Image: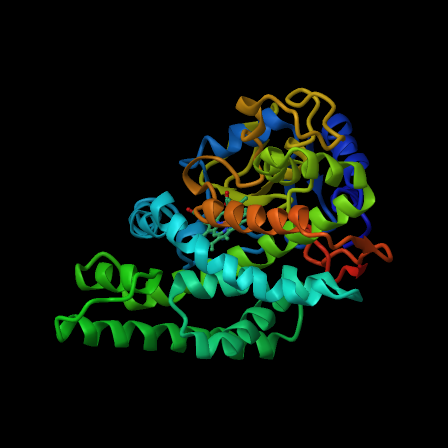
Length: 390
Ligand code: HEM
């Protein structure tokens, strides 16, 4: 793809790219891509698309390529609603409270590296492993299998940017088989009348026993939780550290007022949305901004630009922890409506735990060079973040 508005919107500092899209071509047609697609970038247009799932659906996949036969984020109602109803339970506030203690232990273990002065890649040392291990906890991966799981997560996520596709295929199959084995173990427990561990695979296995999910759906849903929740959260963590290093006054503000940590997570999500924008496909020809778009066209709803729209946000290109709390959570970093990120409570928990550590610890993290941006243009994050700490 030629260097385009879309890529500029994914720059290290994306404000210009977003502004150009919103002001000059609020309905942009990206012709240099196969398949070509449309982009909406203004807050009200993005919201308009997300509010019409009956026209703008996910069954052709939420990415730029047409991919059918997926689950949850890659499908529409009634399958979507049925699958989501099962997984809803996994992310309830009560479950997050139980998880918090275990995640703190994982975080503290990873943080040990930063207790003695050093230099390294923050993505590799913290931002990447923390979310992978958190999802392993949620799913019910055996602690002895964590390394294996982490490797699959790495290989699958590398594939999003066009990595080694053979490796991705191998990792996909191994992960599906692994999930299926976990289901088998739980079915045996059910047969024996034993108690099931409290995790997502158990929840889905019970749904299978009740006829609400198939085994294939369980494999695909487990896989989707990993793919949707890994790189996105890793990006958020790395972007937060990048911003705090570049604007140390923000870190000072959080040290003086730790009660701002939760609003800060929302502001980082708004300012540096790790998911630039996902795609919908229209089931019938329909108008968008006075243009008729033929049925079966891909359109990207650019969440990240909506999150910088001055029509919605005062001073959108500054990071401010003092925004009106009623507005602060209305960013579109987790989408909106029926497909709103089901893992948002977990992502928020991980980000808060990471930020609490960064704020409370005496370690100073300094970014050493401009980080490389991850290749897939629908996501925004760093492939590495070279830092030193003392
Ligand atoms: C900062 C981290 C995250 C960001 C920015 C993010 C962003 C998003 C966005 C924008 C959507 C909406 C998709 C659409 O409208 O088509 C979404 C959906 C989804 N997310 Fe997240 N996400 C994050 C973390 C997570 C985590 C931790 C998990 C799970 C472990 C997760 C699992 C999912 C799933 C399964 C969906 C599909 C939901 C559905 O279609 O009903 N996400 N996410």
